[in-house]
Length: 291
Image (spheres, rainbow, N blue to C red):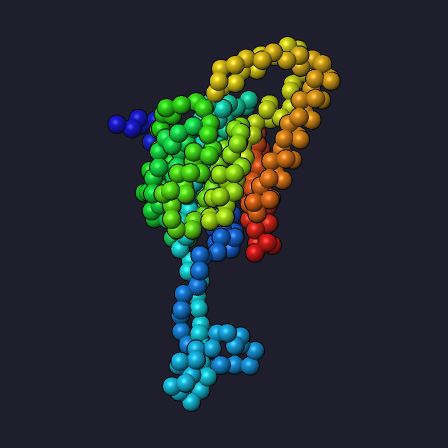
């Protein structure tokens, strides 16, 4: 039985994110994610300026006029939302954890897809596939997805992004839009992501927390890895230590973004302490310019 508190949490998230979707993202989503192909719609007489490749030669040969094919975009998409539920996602230095942010982003993207009559699926992963829900249409299906994001208790705290990529390649045969939501605190996942990006429209969404990027000036800090349990002590009172930590994180982010670009992936980088609306709008605008 699902606890009442969880049901209320999902309902509150639905209300919050649907308002954002209805007021901001529906049109952006529809424009940024084109249908997977074109369907034949009708015929009409050839006009000066028409592409000769669209001429229907069989119909034209049977009539006294030249006809061209008209096509319409096949609008329906498969959208699969991948959410990293490993131990590091439950860290947050302020009111919101990375998992809280991941759930909100999943809701915004999912309801945007539902509003456009697209099918939405879910894959939750740690270093194993925790749950997979095949794509389906409708609001009730989307609410089930949100319940599972909150309700699933991961069997492992570790992360293995490649496991999720392999599962997608095995289970999802139709070209789909894949939103990969993670903090990407993992290694050796680039090869598997490249394989997925060649077949699907892969969108990496990196969720960070400010305390993972900048050390506070607080003296000796105990930094615990929430996946392995290892503890490292750092003297954050030292300006040189804080600068070295910042430079290391900055270089890592630049390299990560470079890898995403090499795969032709439009990525999104979010922080738990910031509003995600503007970064998502910039992402949609960037896609429109590229398309």
